[in-house]
Length: 244
Image (cartoon, rainbow, N blue to C red; front, top):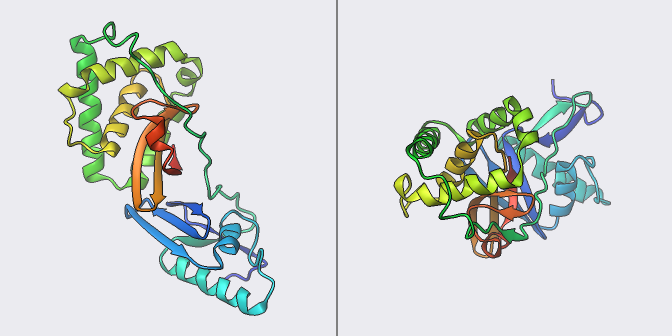
């Protein structure tokens, strides 16, 4: 039996993230590794539903309400939305990322960064794990594993300082040519960096962003608005759709 609107709430499926560009919504289906875009006059009302403001938000006419219900049904058919009990806590549908304001400068410590064989082994291990995860797991499973790493090492994360992060990123940049090639995509580079830093108790944010003119997706790592493996000027062209 289908739930009535009084006993059920429409929400994003757990494996889906969404962000809004004015009159367009972009969905990221983590299970399928697929981006889906929709547009139209009901985008505002639909986004209000996704953010938990209730069915029919910003919809004044019955005909518009029916169109909204039709749009919701289509999203449910694509497994992008689901019904959940009103008593069940809702996961936020949109996760805000701190706007990138600067790129990490390692010029002063690059030459003194650790480049011994132990550090290189840690980097190789991170690269191998990232490669295996990207080949064998879907993005939803990878996100869950990264979140589990952070949860298990909460105490180490709380004690991490900016100097330790700077030194670790400098080591990564210095040794990266021995583990990654110029053809490796941003997703693998970012995931490898996340795993390399996690091995030292450091857990910055892993971000995937999208743009729509033209459409594109990009991944990077940042901490409190400081981009660690890219240039802030470049990633500002993308809007975060996933922050881990």
